[in-house]
Amino acid sequence: MKRYRVPTVAGSEITPESIYLQRRHFLRSLSLAAPLLASGCSRGEETAPTAAAGPVGKPLPAPRSERWKTDEELTSWNDATQYNNYYEFGTGKGDPARNAGRFKPQPWTVEVAGHAEVTGRFTLEDLLKPHALQERVYRHRCVEAWSMVIPWVGIPLGACLARFKPTSRAKYVAFTTVQRPAEMPGIAYPVLDWPYREALRIDEAMHPLSLLAVGLYGRELPNQNGAPLRLIVPWKYGFKGAKSIVRIEFWERQPVTSWNIAAPTEYGFYSNVNPTVDHPRWTQASERRIAGNGGNLFARRIATLPFNGYAEDVASLYAGMDLRANF
Ligand SMILES: Nc1nc2c(c(=O)[nH]1)N[C@H]1C(S)=C(S)[C@@H](COP(=O)(O)O)O[C@H]1N2
Ligand SMILES: [Mo]
Image (tube, rainbow, N blue to C red):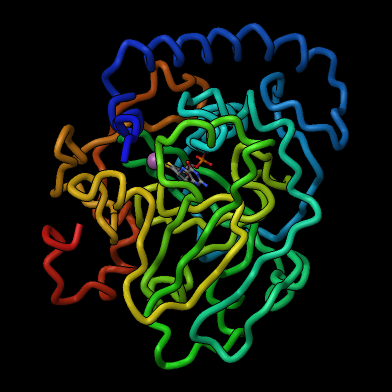
């Protein structure tokens, strides 16, 4: 089977291509920010990500969690919504914001299947019912060694899953994301084995940190960030955060995941952020923190923390496991 080389994810840290993209992104944000701020116009419900100076999209107010927060400097809306990985829209960091305009995240249904008492097709509104929306400020770290700090809006994933009454055979939860070639130009390239699939062990999925996100910065998720719903598992590398989920399935055996099939020696099933286990081609001991006004071109390098700084909350999930073997 013929497949393109995968390493964009990885290689972007070092290739001239990514330097070029980053510089262009930075210059664009400089030239666009001023006029938009000056005009003070409200952009209403239109999302125009590439021209956004501040949050746009439908407001999604939610009380900020006192428990799940950080004092670290937030990433700007522009960086969080214009420097993305969403390969269905292209592999460049600016591609998702540029190419996701045709994607229609409404109406939306999710199919629930597998080892659970309650299965079937559910609307987005129905899925979100078990819990009030809340805002949580999480660190968000890509396997490519860049990171952001983002206020997400969502509900605990566990609250959503519990209502399906997973049976004792449900040891894992698999997430499949949407595949619409007509709206997603990146799908034409076999970079990954579409549709994009990710999975968690059931205890990871039920952990209170795992979030089913529908917004960021008090707005509905822009398409490039995974509208209308995505996972955020903040102690794991960003690729575990499946975007635009259409199917949730409870499995007895460990499910197949897209990145693991693409490069099994580089992307393991667990993918917990771990500064002591390097990616085969680069260090994971530090990261570029994309936050504040510097833009990602001048992002400062900081040390990476075990479990992305959430060790106190999640390390016990892996007690006794060899995290080098189970990377
Ligand atoms: N469907 C889908 N989900 C995806 C991806 C993708 O390519 N397709 N990329 C992943 C990766 S590698 C990262 S780092 C995060 C990026 O999320 P962000 O763009 O909102 O920062 O989304 C993850 N979810
Ligand atoms: Mo990533």
